[in-house]
Image (cartoon, rainbow, N blue to C red):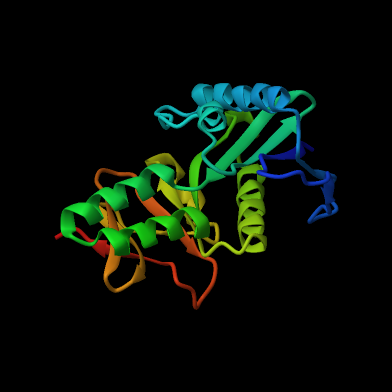
Amino acid sequence: MPLFQMFRRKNKDVPVKEVAPRSTSGEEYFCIENEDPRIALKKYQEVDDFFAEHIADPTKNHLTGTMADQRGDNLVLVAMLGQTIVGALWAGPPHAEADDAVVRGQRMGKEKQMKSLANDMKQRSLMLHNMAVTPEFRRRGIGRELLLLVIEEANDAGKDLLWGVASPEAVDFYSRTPLKVAPNQGILTIANSPKAVYGLPLVGESRWVYCQLRQVVPLQVGFRSQI
């Protein structure tokens, strides 16, 4: 069975801790924190290379880039067989989307409200930036286990929601997870008040996926059809 390792960049010194395995099937889980930045950079580059190899249309975001510009914590889960990465998931604050919300607020005359929403988006949500499993290791539960671990970590961190985009090939996978799969060609909405609503349109065959982690929270996620 693969060895799961969790790499998380922290803003302050945190002791290394072990995370108990969720099953007795042989997996081991470790949380490795407070590493030398040079070591972390090497690991992030390995994960970036893995995503570039296994995702047809990888995001413009790169883990190594987030280290360089100091843009908050990343949560990176890596499934390994020996020294080989067989699966990886990267989630983190939605910085680009939050910045866009502020720009839209300026245009609408709601700069104060949208700045508040942007801050909540960065502080209270995690976006799934990238996720992949090598073809030969698919349908073994690795992707689902990575996703469940992210949900567990997000809950422990007090996040309100987890969200992202599923490629057409991944829609069936996400439909068997706790995340909701939105209909295609619609708008994902994120809001912290009736006056601060950020809508993200999506066209084509890709779908929004999202999971509201808490029932009564400031940050709410929803979906509406294109008008």
